Length: 262
Image (cartoon, rainbow, N blue to C red):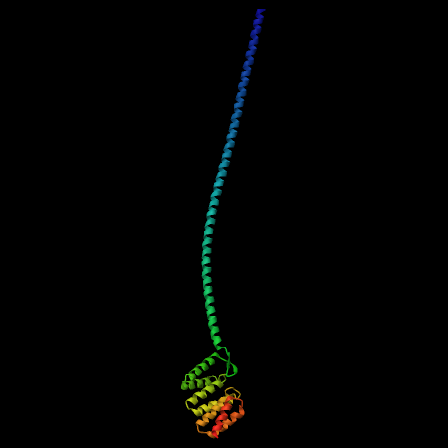
């Protein structure tokens, strides 16, 4: 019986050793299996990391290329801006030059227009009032008449005669003709050219017998006749003066003269 117990104990130990061996082998297989999975996981992770790194490198390269392209575009844009600025400055300078030239042209045109207007204004007739008569006359006529009268008033009867005679010849239809004939006759009378003076006084009377100077002209004709010793002619002229212009100052003088002639 003791032997049986011993054999039973040995058998139990044998079974226990077998079980232990089996568990150890199983554990070893399980551990080996787990290592393979881990290596595979690690390899997969490495591949993913490599792929991610590749993608990151590509993205970084793309960004670098994009930044480089953007930088080039910015440089190109900057150059275009500078060119545009230079062109604008050139255009501004050209515009300023054109404005100066235009201003100069406008100034010249204004000066020319003023000069033309001044020349035309000298040619335009002006209204003149002289010896109670209003008429239109060119400025040149006014200038020439005033110049001749100024010479007469200085007592230069020779030149006054020349100036008034030339005036009548140049402007036969001027409103100044009657006054010019009057002063021409007076200049000739002062020079004792009585016949010439008498002819101009009579021309005045024939041209405008109603003129303010007409009575004086008739009296001057009588004076010329008296200087030429034509008392009879002077008496008739004075008598006609009193009849034609009874209210004039010349008529008063004519009456006084007639009284001395009788």
